[in-house]
Amino acid sequence: MSETIDPYELQARRLRILAALYRKRAAELDMAAEAALATRSMRQFMDAWNAGVAQDVAEHPDLAELNVQLDGFYDAGPVRPGEETT
Image (cartoon, rainbow, N blue to C red; front, side):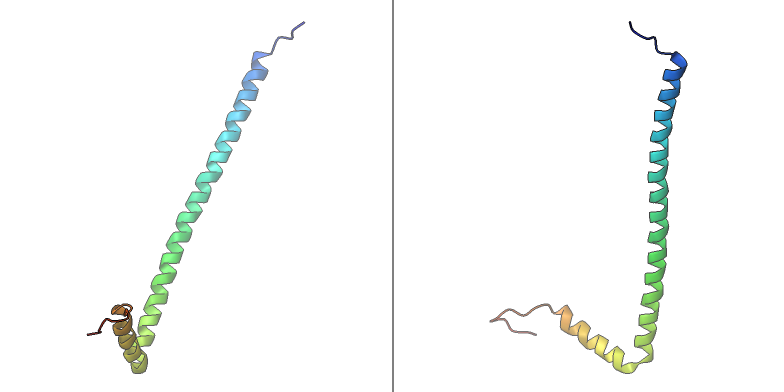
């Protein structure tokens, strides 16, 4: 004895499964949208941070001189034994 499956019940099951898939995809897209906003906020934060650092260096001559010295030191790269620095 096999029961006949009600076509309306079958259609309702299919639609519930489809709705669950769409809810999952909607949550993924919502998370991607929030990540995009977080990225924008972090970029704005870094721009403000860099502007503040540049202002601090410009306002303090000792920091500006130290910055130039460090740039010159680190731009040369590491010195290997037996090499002369120019």
